[in-house]
Image 1 (cartoon, rainbow, N blue to C red):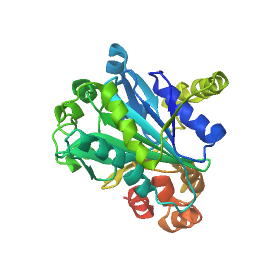
Image 2: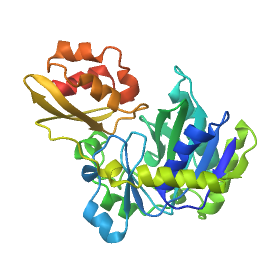
Image 3: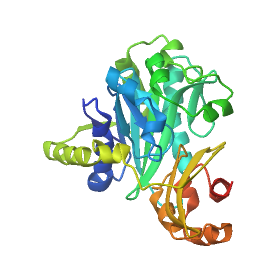
Image 4: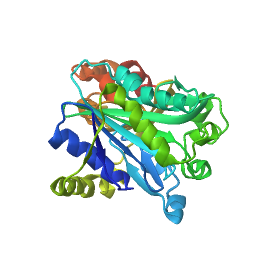
Length: 330
């Protein structure tokens, strides 16, 4: 296993580094990054930035808002949060859930057990201590690789997290909690170790059950290429806040596997434009599904016909064709 190390505190750098590793470095073994950021809101690939965070508050206190390439919901990270990325070769048909268990949740469980804390996996992507979330997970597939993210609340500013995130009230109600801060907790509340640097090293060691972790720094020419990706994509406001055409109809529904919000422009009984947002855990970009539906008559039978040949499950991850149809025609 290779551990790519860098001292950047910008999420855009690491998302760009992920893309560089998958597109250009192309390792045949697992690649790992363990990192922290300045105060940042990371919104999921299929979310609407303005709906997921308080932009005015974020600007007033210097919180950066950035869109990540994976699905799922918005999260807040700061220097007290430990982020990690695992990149693995992926073949069609591989079980992404087993990757979560072995490569994302496994090392967290092992590390915290060493410090005397017991944790478990709950729901579709949460790692919890005594019912409170301390880690979230998201994944996406690109260029023959599965890229997985994890976010560990080690000593995160929970008050700031609760203030900046504007989570859908329906999502909170489905979890039977009163607020965001009632749902999450810090790892430091359960272990004696308070230094994130020491915890980071113990966490890295937990990956050595898959072989020796070899540390690697990016070369100057690699950093230059990563910088280009960072500027052109992840620091580009069009990527973070990009708006599509005007829509005439909106449909919204929440399921156990996540929420769907579908914006439609329907003219002459046909779907002219469509945008599918939500915190669903997709493995493939949603654009393939959206393109398949453009031009289809807004009727259940015609939409089902248009969906043939599209792997809806990969595009919607934790949801599927049934949930899509329920939302479209509710």
